[in-house]
Image (cartoon, rainbow over all chains, first blue to last red; front, side):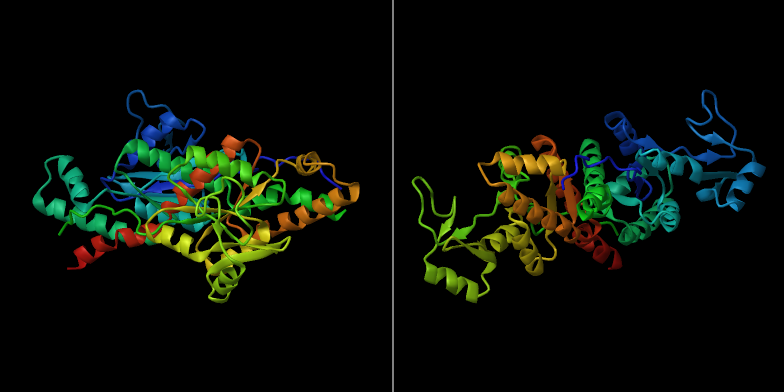
Amino acid sequence: MTSNVSVSPSDKGILIVLSGPSGVGKGTVCKALRACAPDIVYSVSATTRSPREGEVDGVNYFFKSREHFQQLIEQDQMLEWAEYVGNFYGTPRKFVEDTLNSGKDIILEIEVQGALKVKQKFPNGVFIFLLPPSLTELESRIVGRGTESEESIRNRMSVALEEIAMMEQYDYAIVNDQVDLACHRIRSILTAEHCRKDRMVSKIQHWMEEVRK
Amino acid sequence: MTSNVSVSPSDKGILIVLSGPSGVGKGTVCKALRACAPDIVYSVSATTRSPREGEVDGVNYFFKSREHFQQLIEQDQMLEWAEYVGNFYGTPRKFVEDTLNSGKDIILEIEVQGALKVKQKFPNGVFIFLLPPSLTELESRIVGRGTESEESIRNRMSVALEEIAMMEQYDYAIVNDQVDLACHRIRSILTAEHCRKDRMVSKIQHWMEEVRK
């Protein structure tokens, strides 16, 4: 009657999308996460801009020609893409899918609009929104970035607030009050997501089949 | 425009219900969790049986007269209850609600039928199902408990399998392969649940109100 088959490891990895308003510290959190969670794969973006000194293809970016990039867009091979200052930037679908199929989790650090585009293609991904500890703190981070005009700061704060309102479409929201705490929360979310019933049910399916014999 | 108000701590605690088939090790996991997560409150059951030597009212159990217990059932003050060997056992609603209202998380360790009754009254609770590493392992734990007959073991395994099928109604399932790992998963689930968007949205509501002014 009983089966000796244990609970098997998940077949597929989980896609985690980390997003949030400009200035919230997505890059800093992701960098800290890399150090403390080497088991997570970090998505590599594609770009049409030229490699800078020391940048390695497939590590810093996938460097593509303009023609190749446009071809990938047409073939629905970009989960999201945008043009900045004359260059294309985007997230190649293949790298994400290959990683998930190999059973590894992959994290995508991306701005809010891009994240929502990814959600259309990967509704089963885990979408995490990074919040500033307070709006004052966000403003001081934006101000602290450089010598922007008062109007530019007002504009950027206004965009940030619109982006915060989009948190509604995410699964989780974490406060970036301390980078190590934010990392701990992201890792906890990932552990919890691996324990979600829907993912676990498929793992013990063979028990039920064994029992029905 | 900007608000100095930080993200506020959650007003309400989270109810965690830990359940699973008989023999899976719910008690052992809960005991280990008590040691490593003193911030979680542990629900105290009510019973009509007499206190044993050393048992303290409100710590081991809430000791009630049969009349008082029945009164509490009639007043819908028991989240679930059952009768075993002539005594009533149940989960008093007031202790759970008072703890949640004070902002603390509370954990309920309970068998599968009771957990599903609690779910009807607290659909927002977090329901965690504890799984054995394998069915063989569950059987050997049941066998290892004493000198039960082969028929009794077969019956208990059959009940356990029916209970495992009820995992469908839970939010999470974790494997009790190692007690410390099981504790880590439960704590991760709790951290993740505190970060769920729906809980966080209410915390930053005042930002949006501030902005709309």
